[in-house]
Image (cartoon, rainbow, N blue to C red; front, side):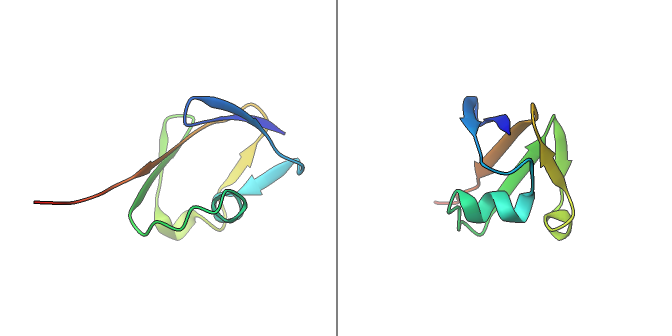
Length: 67
């Protein structure tokens, strides 16, 4: 599948991934993430069931705090 991930075209070997699988594939281990698929916010408890498929636009934003 080919998706747009953080404004970059990326290809993957599987036809679909869950958000959880995509995070593991890309080795994203940050704790505070905001994830959108095609502009729709995905809640953390839905990462295991939300599918990403060919042509989707995925934004994964790492939230940081500081002071």
